[in-house]
Length: 453
Image 1: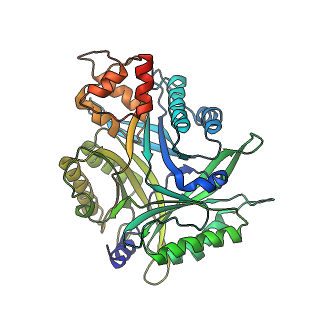
Image 2: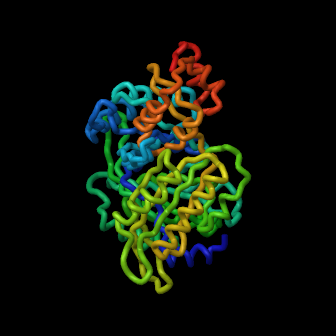
């Protein structure tokens, strides 16, 4: 897609890309620099509703983060606060808070086992049925100025996240004002069509075994794969490390995503019954004046989006900025919706329907879409016996995605009480028409122990 088209659309709606409240890895991946090329992205989604009543508090989750996750992945992690909703079988909309932890790790059997152990520990400690896992092996990770972008320039959009640690060695911190000045003077002029900034906090273990926490900023960019844009990324990284005495800036590039403002550009493949991730970005400024309020958007979510994707979705608040044609920096609030769904024509039509209704109702030029067909989606289920979901629900369980995974799965399982059947997990995974994706080591573990669901 030509840069001119992108620039015009950003100028009209500022296509602010998703932020949300994020806990970021900051500069904590220093130890992995030498092996950054071998890192993959693992994301875990933890539902916070407790079936017997109450909620996993922020303090409870922080304790779990400190005692269970960080010791297994001491080099750093990212946590997002998420809100999701789905349509219950009674027709009521159910909302649930959740936590989303992202890790960049080496793809080793030990690390895969740790992912499984973390999920089971959460299931047991907070009486959850499952933790949703989303793996992405298509990212390129770097800490320096090496070859982050591995393909030759092809004018293809790529997604790049830059993680800026804010602690200044020796003393002090990069303030919000300092970073905003850097954003205005260094990043935005190089990427004038739009960017997103995440307020972030992260943690890791230092060499003494002490948990170190650090505020950081995560800037998300979508741009065409050109030598000029690649050079701009390197320039941004160099200037930040020099200005604020930083060791490095973590860079994560995903060249597998498809980015478009026209759904026909990226959702036109033959249905393959393969899960895809789609993120939709809705600008909230209304041309001529005014703004799509939180209440207006919630009503749109309840009446349009959720009925089309009843099994679950996630919403993030977003802020972005871009340069308009006069060179002024324009800021705009936005909303981002993340969906996991089966690659069917019906789901594609639903995406078109959502976009059309939003642009018409709120006088928008377009809605930005980002599609990733190369993620692996699976549930790590609790080891205790639970009722098998009916096959008609099974894909929906996976599609619940980043909602509030565990409790949603429980509600779906409770729904399917007409035919109770208990088999080994391995038998179910191998024979069920649902074809729920679970990693081979997990299947072998279940099969060896004869665990049942």
